[in-house]
Image 1 (cartoon, helix red, strand yellow):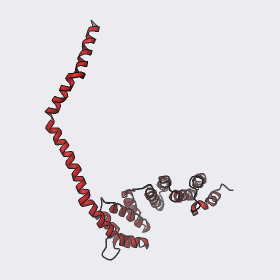
Image 2: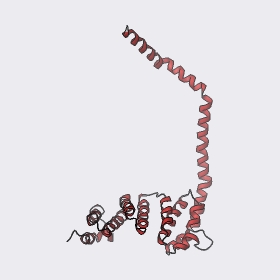
Image 3: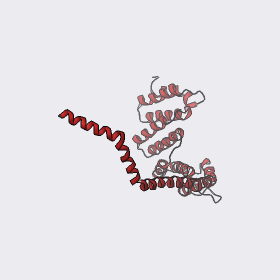
Image 4: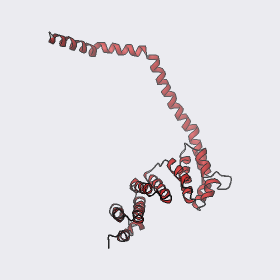
Length: 233
């Protein structure tokens, strides 16, 4: 008797899978056809709206921002960091205004980085952290530079635990010989400053083995760093 009940159940399941379930799906589609169409139409509108926003608003703003930024970059290159931030001259915006006016564009994003570095050099460390953390790095190389700058800010604030964390991120962010080598050297020197000689030697040894680059002074002088850290004594 029990076997017969099982057979009946199997038959019902088989019928649902092979035929009846198809009719049920079609019935559901018919019942909710308008809702499905509305949802699909809404997705299309959102996609087209985003494409239109990007083409008609973001791209022109990016072009305008790039044209506006050159004077601030000129002052930045001269180490005139306060002028680069606020008043680079010639009626052009400084990095602060560009970051605000052109947020959402690549140029506005880059202005956040510039603001952070300017504030770092002028001793305004809290503002430097704010802008550097708002900057979204688009390449591994710039991720390394960003993290290195944040490490510098924390070092200036004497928050050495946070500085160490960001220097390690900087050293690990990029496989570029010059950039990775630079931040491994900096990490090693930071460990020396903290009297962590073993960690310093590990950073210098990694620079020597993993990023050999005779064109880099950081790599050519690595033996000196290792010796200085105590391995040669």
